[in-house]
Structure formats: C-alpha cells, structure tokens
Length: 346
Image (cartoon, rainbow, N blue to C red; front, side):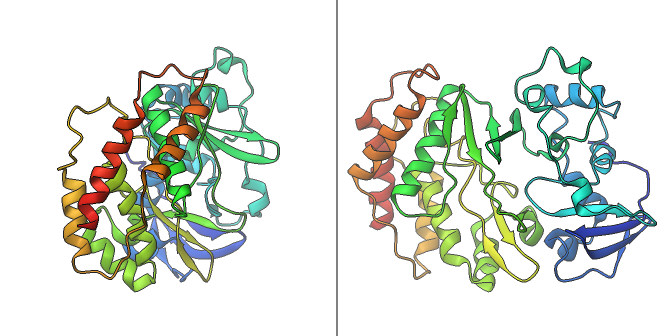
C-alpha cells in the first residue's frame, strides 16, 4: 500500500476524549488510554495504515472509485472517514473543528452488498461515509446493520465457512470464550463482538508482528491474560488453524481495562483447503504447543468425541441447503481432532 504523503495535525480521540496530539504526523501528549499501538510503537501513519481495508480486494477498489478516492492510498481513504471504525471508538479530528464522536459514528450499510460480493448498482448510489473503509482483512466482507445490530458477513468457500462454524461451536461446547458464527445466504456471519464503549485492538499493538509463543506468553502473563491466550492456541492446535497472525487476535480495552478478545476468525482451520489424507496430526501446531505446555501450569480443556460430534452437527445444520459441501465424514473429523488432543494430553 502506498502511504499518504499528506501530514496530519489534530488529535487522536477515544470517544470524545483526546488521547494523543498529532503535529504533522508527530505524536505528543500520548495518554494511557490511547491506542496500544500508538503507545507502544509511536507511528501515527502506520496506525492509520493498519486501519485501512485491504486494497487488493477488487470490490473494495470499486467502492473507492465510486467515492473518488485513491485505490492505492489506504491512509488517505481512512482519513476521509476520520479513521472511525465499528470495532473501536478511536478516530481522528483536525484542529479547529467542532466534530464530536456522534458525528463520525456509522449509521447505515449502503455499501454492504458492494463490499461483500459486488453491487451492479454501486455507481448510481449516493456517496456517503462507510464502515467498509476501515473493514480490514483479505477476504471479501461487509458490515450489515440488522435488527439494531451490526453483523459481519464474510465470503469464503463452502469448506472455509463450514470450518469457521465448526470451530466456533466446538470452542463453545468446551466453554471457551469465542465468537459464534452461522451461515446466512452462503456467507459466514457473526455479530460485532465489541460492546458499546469498548475497543478491539489487534495484538500488533502490544506484540508487534511477532506471533511466536514465547513473546506472546510473556506479554499475556504480564497482562494477567495467559490462560485465555492458551485457550486460543489450544483450539488452534486441535483444529489446525495456522492463520493466527497479529490481526486475528487481540484485546478488548476501555480507558481503564484490558481483556483478551474472544476467539475469532478460524476460517483457515480444519478442512478449509480440503480433507487431509493423513489424520495422525504429527504437525507443527501440535508439537510446538506440547513444548510450550511443558513449562506452564495449564489444564487442557477436556475434549471428547461427543463434543466434536456436537460441533459437527451444528456446522452441518447451519450449512444445510446454504452451501454445497463435499462429503465430510464424522469419523474423519473426530479422528482429526482427537489425535491432536491425545498427543497433547500425553
């Protein structure tokens, strides 16, 4: 992504409270309730860049063209919506403006269809501020406002959607903190898991781009969140999710508190790219977690074939008549997950 050369002067806001001052992209007066990434890394432009939608998504480029914004400069596009997002209360305000947080909160989903799957009527729509500008991630996705709730719809192959739903239901059955997914109109769908007044902040804010277990364990222990983090990587090992990058987990913060966000974004787990022929699970995710757990006091959540069958049935029910799935044998799913679990408990 090309980074905007325009310098910004103003404030980073949390709701209606100033949490950092910006002078020509230089940060001053950074408060403890400023974004974690601003506090730890101190790079205003990088923070803006990380808030931008992936400009490689073709549907997103069409939206930017419609809004007469650059399709190569995500930072400039983010500035056009005051860097506001549906998953936190951070935004930017230029000096000498009377804007309030209520002025930059998104209230409609006019571009939902255009962002998710393309809209043939896009270029005849009015131009308005849209949450899709700050809807990060590489998959085609869109925010939809339904029954007073913002919901995230994400595109994917039938196996990706099934894997997302299966993983969320298995975590739920094990009483682990997770975002629940369902299948609607052939898409994986979840409610916005960030409650009003709170912020989701990606792990990059505290950890950078190092998603290795050692760095994470040190940070999570310091924050008092180690068990919740281990719950997430335990599930990653069971369902073989190798996509736990620095934006696929993170923290829920207020101006005074920090907690680990629930487990989300598991579409690249289980059988997302096909059903494996080798179910022995001699893979890196299992062996590395075994090494980590040797040095930690962590009780593995008990996993049974019945738990897996529960999640399997839920995923099948959700996907029934909504996507065309290949044959996914229950005994294959049980073997795949239980073989990982048996190795871990040994």
